[in-house]
Image (cartoon, rainbow, N blue to C red; front, side, top):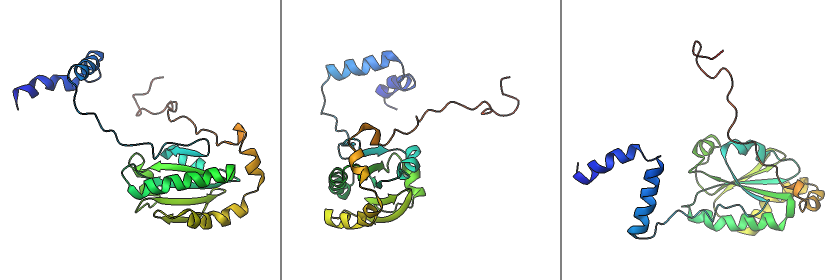
Length: 194
């Protein structure tokens, strides 16, 4: 180990301390370096109430929204075809008002869901109507091809959903919070408080 790393070693264990955070901020101000490049999440950012970023816990309830065609796009920030397809899907969701909803699942953050759903390549788009998968496609299709894929689902969705889409009540309700209260019996037998 180099001597400079020996000095930093104890700091690794204290990374959560406020003093360390202040040191990081001060050192960043004192020694400007090359700008940090963060992965672009602009491609996955939701665009209004018709487009949402989904986590694994929200997937089932979002796909089962009744009276809508629900598109679930399995994507990643590093995927070029995903960045091409994303704006097309968002445009289709906006075009159809409240009849088409789009959920984006980042496979890097929700890998278990992607494995469970059998996602082999991305972009992978699943089309749901009333909770049932009616179609799917892999790859960056053009808008006309996507419209053709969702047309049978749109025929099943009432036009009344379009008028109610402008009201805030029509937007999909947010999923239940990720933090749930713990159950009483979560500890092993003999260690439970009484």
